[in-house]
Length: 374
Image: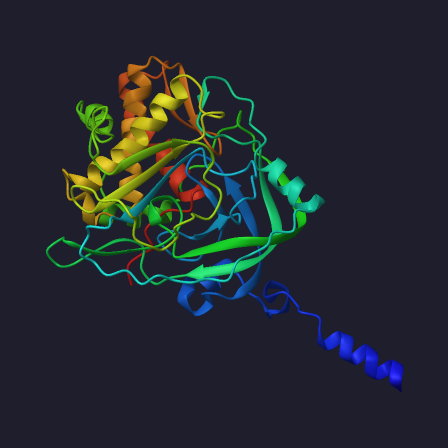
């Protein structure tokens, strides 16, 4: 009896980590995206296809009927993983912005860096072998079971009033597009799928014609490259845009908080580029893509402030194609095998082929579209 009591007493002194003692909720990508705020702060387990690419590091859903049918994936701070997006733009409110921000305190996550995680990270960072320039093209997508802390919110991106004034900011991942983010705790049951870049990407299905009801692509203009470059500001100018060269796969240090810095309009843009994976002309076209986003948020020319993510991305990829032409790149491919520019295309084929490549990439690879209206 004494031995039993001693054992029970010792057991009572053991402190079980919160991340391990929390109940794990089994769910799916689509169920989470249907009501992301109801999962906020919970430890969830989901199985899905994970992609890492140009601006993408996400778990894809299938048939979720959302504008962005994916959950952003993030490693805990200090992971030093290799996989992730090669270009990334995070929006943040400056100290001088009048909008109120509620600081969210979330429990830390400890990642299990076992052999499954190392395999997962290696597969998603293995570069694809392609001809020409390929932006963030990886060799594999990965299907896996993932466990982690789910962060969820109802709104994404810049929140504006009826007059277009920014009154708040929400969301996760690149351009704060995502309603949900999974901070990875463990990964298992890994299988990989090799992408056939020689075959090319799959065309966007016909039922995505609903996209055109909210966004109609317009011919790119010659000044788009200049506007994208000017968005970063002149040397020494403090315009609220910061540029860093390194990975963007970890949760931000000052997550969900206002910055300690000011900017002319109270908006801050944190642009990151993986210089190890963006060499030569690839870096130039990546800069033009991200610069387009900054320019059209700050100084919209076609009402881009109210355009869906599909439209904003389409415009940025148009600028990327223009920059590829200016840089005399032979061919430009993006993740999933989508060719959006080839020097051999005739002028009559250029618009049609670029449109097919961009729309196929957004719908099938990035899972960014516009659901049919009810």
